[in-house]
Image (cartoon, rainbow, N blue to C red; front, top):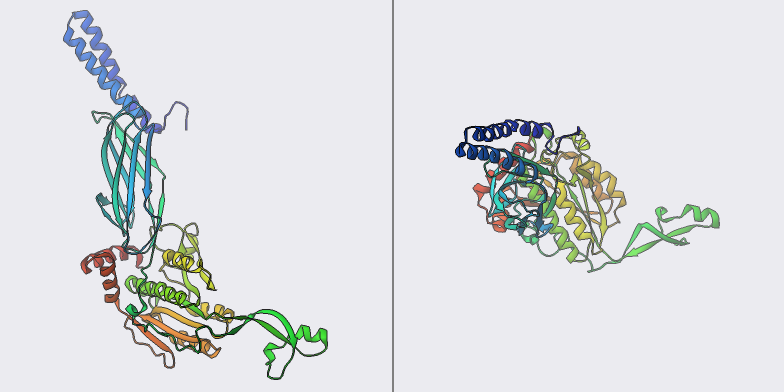
Length: 460
């Protein structure tokens, strides 16, 4: 910044320069009062001096010593919950503030009670406006209720502070890059809510905890026995021992469930995306994962979508555009099956941050991951029915041929040909609207208005 300029830069300097004539007027009036011996002219000079000094004094120091804090009751919440937002303003100086205006950016998809929101030029953003006055060394706090009526990662801030002199002649503005992130998980419901039976939805199990062997985890070798297949032969050990040796696998007593979530709404990307159906699919994925972990499964989650590390104003419309937003986006969802206690929170984190945009073909994900799954795993595809292609059905049949149980959970009413596969219908958009109404209390008209506002920036 050039020497002689304050925080306001050239604009602030010009504002102060434009007020220099007030000092000349005040000086001229005082000198004139001494010449003509008129007290009223001297008083007018004092008033002119006050109009020159007071606005400049507040302009220079009104925002110094001002502390703004934003506190969220929770940083991670479930869909439909309500948390407290606390805003605190403190004036740490002798100079009082006759007026202070605060404009804090707020996510449009979330609901707010107790505050005043106004439109913002940024998509999917609103402005939370607060107006107050602060005396010297005074602190004021205000509380609002935030309704988490949308899944995703949301950013509050930055904030703009605006204040000035008591006459309103000069206004000073400061932007504070203070950001707070809120992550909203998808709703978790009983699997019966999605049309799945509560007992054995993906087939009968011979025993509660059947003993299996994981072919990907070799713990040793032994002599070959009749009945051992060629895949079990350890050829390097056989060459060293000059006799047939078989691999010894690490036994596992946990059933494995692999969830594959398809974020594509249609087979043709030109048709855009269907937010209600995708949110229904994500809610089903979270609910099935919760049920499976409770039943003792080792659960994994894979998706062809990307995760958001921070809120993105406009969703990417292609893979190349997503790559350009790498500062905001993380890698695709890839959580191998596990029964550890931290697995489910990791899955909720991934589902909460998942962005429904045009992902890569889900068939590629199956080809990459199916060979890494233990034999006997249950593979569940969660997708919209309109995104299921004959190629995808053929891929699922190949997965079943490798010894895996396969099931489809489909959102929407689009017809498909999936003979030989277990198919569950999650329902259409009305099912998601009912879930939202039961969870948040919003009626259908409010949901449709919010959906239309979101689609302006989501659809191509």
